[in-house]
Image (cartoon, rainbow, N blue to C red):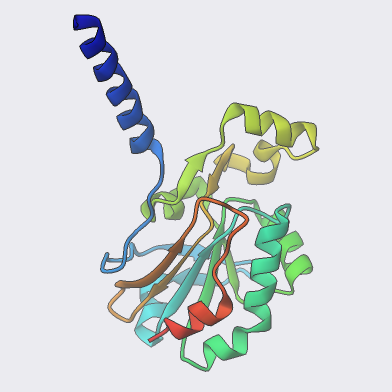
Length: 195
């Protein structure tokens, strides 16, 4: 009996610890953490300043090497006028270093601001950051993708591809948070939720 109880407690603790390490993102109604960063053009971007002007669509993506990210960013760029017509600003955040952001811009034509998240400060504040498991890191390295070179000081950390819409009071009014990196929100869903 003691063995069954001990095993049950062990399983519970392991499950609890794993759950504690998995990012959950922010939920609607949460206050969006402020941040400052520099985009691919050297412009200083402050969330609080942008939010004063209107809604902010905040997008987290993995890197230029991710075809699903490139497709999602390209769709955002192709629909940028529809988003800005609603008074919103698009900002993308990535762990990849600036030279790789240049590759993202070339692949997607993105004209909106893209920020390198130095030390994962933004991704941690929005609870989207996670460390890629070693076996996955090895698979990517064997395919020619070395996260420590792609992400610099951010190492083997990536974000869950998430999208937040933030209002003028810096409240999260909508989110898309999906751990399956192959799934992304439709542009229509984003546009419909900009208020």
